[in-house]
Structures are given as C-alpha cells and as structure tokens.
Length: 276
Ligand code: LER
Ligand code: MN
Image 1 (spheres, protein in one colour):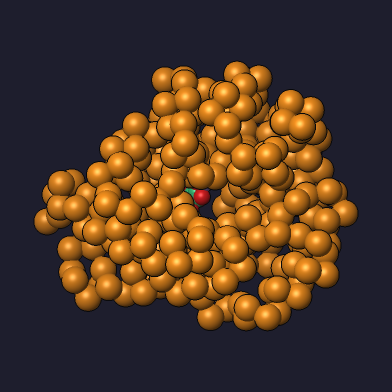
Image 2: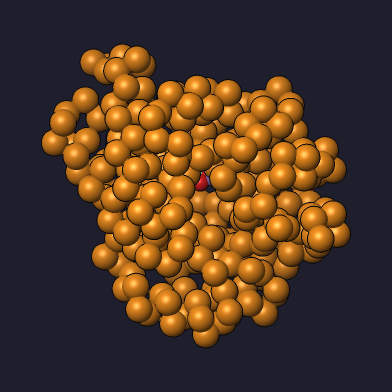
C-alpha cells in the first residue's frame, strides 16, 4: 500500500498562528482538500463535543475523504490538561478528554494524537514521575483505542514545546515499555529537524513503530519551502514499509490554499512517484 496524503485543519481559535494549513471552516477545508487531490484531512478540534459523528461522517463521505487523525492538543491549549500532571484528578481529566476524542475519531476509523498533552516535568514533578504518569495514561488510552482497530499516536516534540520526550529514540523507549503494543509514534519532520542527528536514520530506527508522519519543512512552512532534503527521508519511509499518511501540519504560508497546493506538489514530486 502506498503513502497517502492529508492536510490539517484547525478549529481552535486559541491556536491561531499555529502550524495548521486550514483554519476554522471545516466544510471549506474539506472542499479545498478534495479539489487539490488530498486523500484525507486531519482535524484539530477544540474538544470532543465540538463535532458530531454524523455530521463529520457525511462531510467526509460527500467529498470522498478519509479522516487521517484527530489532535488532542486543545486540552492543553484551552484547559492546561496534561497526562503527566502530578494531581490525580487533573490527570484523570486529561485522560477523559483524550478518551472522548479517541471515541469520536475511532468511530470514523482514525487515531487520536498525543502531542502537547504529554505535558512537561519541573518544579515538584520529577522527570521520572512525569514519564511514569504519562506511560500509565498511554497504556490505558492505547488499550481504549484498540477497540476501534486504530492505534493511539504519540508525538515527540522539540525542546521548545516540551522537556519530556523530544526524540524518536526517547519516544521508542516510552512506547516499547508499555504492555499494549497499540501506541505508535507520530514523526513530525519539523520537530525531528531540530532534535534528530539524522532524520532519515531516526525513521529507520523507528521502523514499524511509525504510525503517522507530519509532512512539513525545516521552518514549518509547507514541504519544499525550507531546507529539508526529502529524498533520503522518503527512501527511509519506503524501506521501513511505511503506508500511513504524510499529513501537512504546516504554517498556512503564503496562505492556506497556497500551502495546501505546495504540499500536494511536494507530495507528488517526492512521495507519490516512488510509492506507487
Ligand atoms: C505541535 O508542535 C505539533 O506538532 C502537534 O502535532 C502536536 O499536537
Ligand atoms: Mn506535529
């Protein structure tokens, strides 16, 4: 199976200025995505209650699109929830938030993403304790996702966004220590460009654990608008047999439609000729 294309849409007003291609207008984003030839959209919702299953199902079906994944970061952005919180009640709120997004996305055949909901250590909270709370949350939520036959995606983030899990290697150590094998890594090329010694080698190291890819350039502009060399990256994805999404989580530069069109041109140049 070949790598499929996806493009992000944010519905979170507080995330304005963030790295999402389309903003606020979900039906408009779906229409543009389809017109440009994307296979799927990835949605960053304000919360699990913001979208109804049936509305989403009919929008996707109408445009012949799949749902690639759904973000949970609004739990952090809007409510400061995090899975490693030292307070048990706050941790539980974080898990509940993610679980309800798993239910919504899973019902549409898509995984949820844990990125900024992993949280940070510091103050009273040691790194070891933070990782332990995070691992317990991932264990429970990974098992929960399995009922929908989808993984839970865990995303290492660069050092300016978390001090917990920055690299693929640290991400692997975390997911491989879980009893559930259902938590996979989301490899975001922007974060990897900051943290990895060699992006392609890190993808090879992750191998079968790669569950999703954020397809973006070194400066978080759309693929082809920075200085990443995609040839060794795509070769590594092919060699590990990756058949998930290359999902454009990038700044809307120069604007949303321009970013989406640029991503599709890059996808066709580097990924589709090699993956078919
Ligand atoms: C945040 O930087 C990011 O890459 C998102 O995918 C995390 O949810
Ligand atoms: Mn990302």
